Image (tube, rainbow, N blue to C red):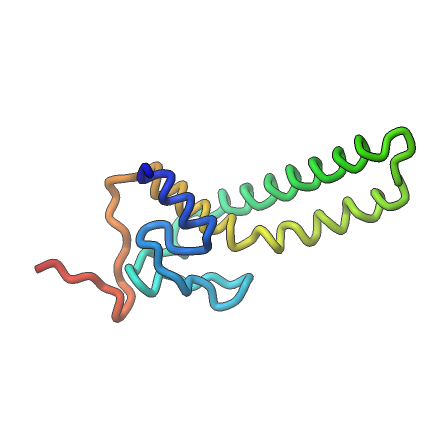
Length: 130
């Protein structure tokens, strides 16, 4: 498995993309500032990309679901159901994808800067060079 594949696989498993550590979230919508295992900073930097991942993922899922329903039920799609399903999905799917999008963005950052040293400033998680 390549390093980039490992980064994204760990992110999709809601683990630290850098070390694979767990416990990165206080709860579903609140990520800790850093990894409790390796100290990788999860809060610093521009996280607008995570929001873009989140919205794009929600739109892709919603489009696939709606197109599948329309194709499956053609020639009489349930338009009344779809007019309520689409906005409901646009509210709920981003909430479901939120932690994944945050960690995928961290993984993307690590993949784009493979030689960068991770921030290790957390008490108890600081690695000491000997």
